[in-house]
Amino acid sequence: MLDDSLLDDQSRLSEADREGLLRAAARAGAQVRATAEAAEDLGVTRVFQERPRALVLVTRPGVGTAVAGLVTALLGPRCPVPVVVTDDVPTWVGALDVVLAHTEDPGDVQLAESVHRAARRGARVLLTAEPDGPVAASAAQHALLIPPRVPVPAGFGFPRCLAAWLVALKALGLLDVDVQAIADELDREAERCHPMHESFVNPAKTLALRVAERTPLLWGLDDLATAVAVHGAGALAGYAGVVSDVAGYPQALTRSVLHRRAVRGTSGDDLFADPDDESEGMVRVMLLAVRQGPQAEFARRVAMETLSGADVLEPAEEVSGGDAVCAALLALRFELAALYLGLAAGTLGGPGLYAPAM
Image 1: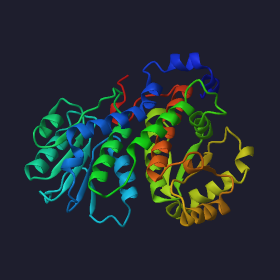
Image 2 (image 1 turned 30 degrees about the vertical axis):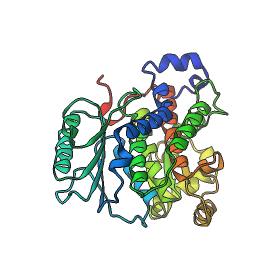
Image 3 (image 1 turned 180 degrees about the vertical axis):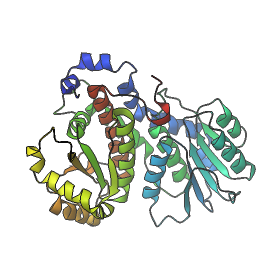
Image 4 (image 1 turned 120 degrees about the vertical axis):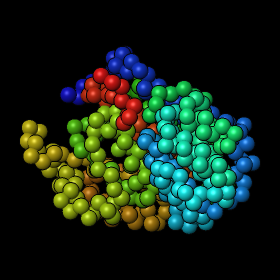
């Protein structure tokens, strides 16, 4: 049962958040800044100067999959090198390739073997992981390892992974992203979403209340927004136990029954639905938009013609910054909203493999 009064009672909220998870999420900007500094100290800019034959993004259980999706969307179809997203380093990787990997499990033997194989074959490898364990040992003298400089619980490594990969991609000349601008905007978002701010002025609390006791349909109006939706769905599931549907809007149109329910849900019919009738769960349509421009505006206009009552999450209307800044901001907002929802509903656990044992 959702106790929405808890969200605006800072003392009760602090008491409920015994693990300090809201504070950990709010350190996203600090993570980005510290990771960029660590990358500079390691000489990432120098090592990753030459453009690779192929870029390999290794995704292991955790936030790596969402970061890989976001980075792939930022690179886009015009990326001058092939981008391979995989959970294991391919056997063909060699000295002309670049491997980026992230894990929050220092005992991930499969990743340790992958990193060792890639480095042995001469590939340039950048790894974000804990400084101890098999994974770190595999990187010794063969790969650049960025350990966490800002302590946060497992599951909160999205900003660290994103920052490290963006620094490397900028050095390779594949992306031009201001990592410091991302860190600054994440700090501002953490302040906007601070527990002391009431729900009607706190974007994360507002988002939490909008999806409470509904099934969120997180539909992206562009590829980058859809990638952020993947992370948002993971956060809602991991921290609040909420199951979401994630799709790009063109794909959502093919889900005819669900789309009809979405149209009905945004038409106002759900206002008169019987909350005790579980034959058809109520949905909350969230249209996510990150990119700007004529194509993005057209996609939004088409979606709103049939889903006029849908919520539209469009960070570019709130802040100034490029696509990467807006995507990172929206990802953090979903994390904070999921935490607020989990605390208010009393269902807060941990994300995925890192859920604490009962």
